Length: 60
Image (cartoon, rainbow, N blue to C red; front, side, top):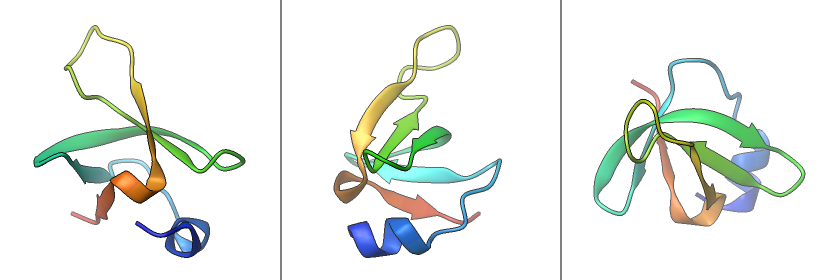
């Protein structure tokens, strides 16, 4: 996702992202740093932060 697309996305609950060939729940967004937190390792693990340029938001 480009920084411009990140800035124009209306983030909401229930969103998912595609990262490194997998699909993950979007957990949080850091608007200042342009980061997206994903549930990469499943429940019970800390969310992992990814640069917005490395993920694709899935609106499903």
